[in-house]
Amino acid sequence: MIGMLRGEVWEIQNDKIVLDVQGVGYLLAVPLGLLGKTRVGEKITLYTHLIVREEELSLVGFASAAEKRIFLEMLNISGIGPKAALAVLSTFGAREAENAIARRDVQLLTKVPGIGKKTAERLVLELKDKFGGTDSADTGRSLKVSGAGEEALEALLALGFGLDEARRALGEAVREGEEAGSEERIRRALKLLARPG
Image 1 (cartoon, rainbow, N blue to C red):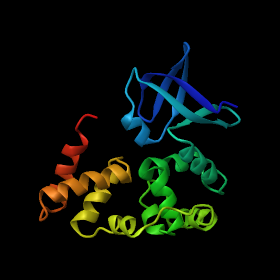
Image 2 (cartoon, helix red, strand yellow; image 1 turned 180 degrees about the vertical axis):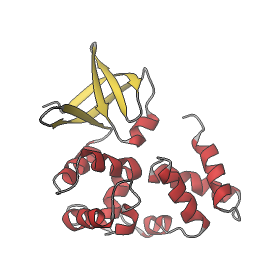
Image 3 (cartoon, helix red, strand yellow; image 1 turned 45 degrees about the vertical axis):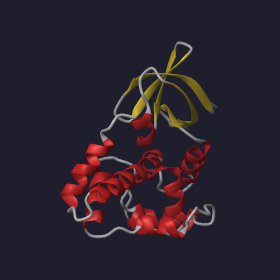
Image 4 (cartoon, one colour; image 1 turned 30 degrees about the vertical axis):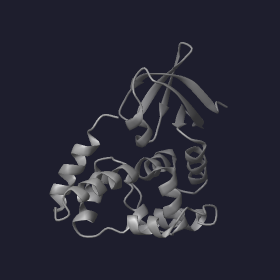
């Protein structure tokens, strides 16, 4: 079992990276949040999990032990495969995914591409007692958006941005123009998200 890899990012693909570890290139599927922060030539350490199938071996990489733990917990649920588990982490990140499950927020979980209401309910039912979450008054308020803010958030999630970064960018966009409609908020948020670093 390969539990960890440390090396240099050799190549970045759509949803994968090639990590050069002493001259051997490992192809790893990774959450989009990690993909967005990674640069070719950067040295990184990834927690890894090997997926074994009849005709294929594939590696999944994670930036933290928490991401890997949540991924493995989701794989234990009937009907949740590696692709769906990665989609949850790509949309929310480890902390927000844990919070959403702990709060039993089925509606929020259905924002993940490929996760319908029944699958979201199954996630909550089977994992709610394992995740305490870090739910606070501030966290609750930050997730409750409506009107133009809700539309803008859904649009950014559909474009593949994680919940954390989408909310952060929209928060800045709102501060810049409180009366902005959803299209204007999305435009401003995308401009902020396009900034390097």
